[in-house]
Length: 157
Image (cartoon, rainbow, N blue to C red; front, side):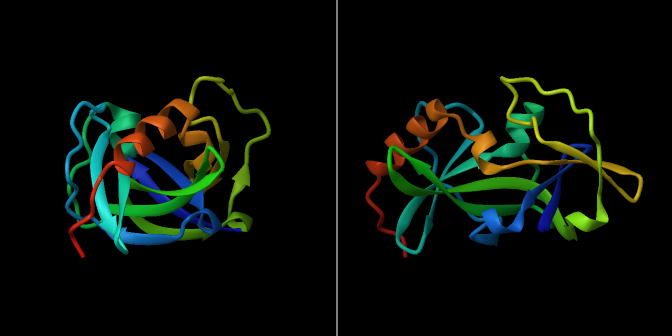
């Protein structure tokens, strides 16, 4: 399985490439009033408003820095029987790797409330955590994101 590798602060993570619809450069986001700080706002993608989640901010409590390697990973999530798109802002998405290159840990501490509870693996002496989009978005978060973006009238093209 091909993985997209990125960092959040000093920590290394990966997402299965099959879960990612597109990898985009950092684009301007329109703000959404009265949402948590980790919601960057929304971007327009192919005529639709897409909420942007700052995963860096979720992980480190600091907004993602705008760097050359910063990327938005566009993914489809299922919420209330509908397919919805979400963009995840991450830092330094500069590599891919195959899961055959990784040595997975058998014993992993799982915290039920943590979205970061994924498989741990080593690659070239670096500890890497493999995440899945469903683990990042709770039902509450989806409701918050999509309630605001459904009301947006898209005028950008």
